[in-house]
Image (tube, rainbow, N blue to C red):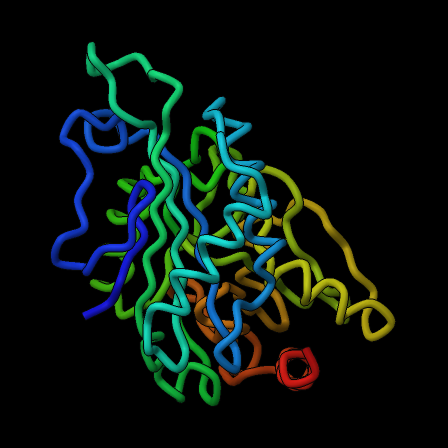
Length: 275
């Protein structure tokens, strides 16, 4: 049974609760971030806490804990669990509210750990399909706990045999997926959207690794341009770098993971092993 950290206490998962007057439950007010371990150690912990703090600022949710205090809670929670490789979810709720609307200024900190699920090897060897979904997140730079749009989009994707859903805005621009950032190789150039997205930690690593290997363009990319790209891939904390070989009903390139994508996958593997 996992041990969670909930509002100042370490408790077994079956006893982990928050009050029903918490605005996370009543109004969907809260932020979170997700990271994983490599070799049993939190991977990019500081970067993920930085993003958590930025998400809280964007929705004007006060954080009474310092960066180091949050990091210490994460480390302590991980130490209380015997999980070789874990996903770590840091959640900050809106806190209790007497009128069920107005924040009291006392958010709750929750840290959950769970084993990392084994993803299919075929994702990385053969590539995956994604579908597109016309929706715009209200505050794209904040990783909020409101995932209704993502849940609906993923149901649509699963029904179409896809593993992810791509958000497309009213102008037909490809933004990001529900839990992933998106990249494309267009004419030998690595292209990724730079606005209207939540910039992932893995996305930043890929951009750093790609410097010196390929010309990089951080710019708008339309759904039609993405579907016509030579190569496409997605990135995320839990999935790493995954080749995309089909977007909606359009086959990408040869229908197999492209050479540039495979080159970056190797670079990512080497980077992870070194760090």
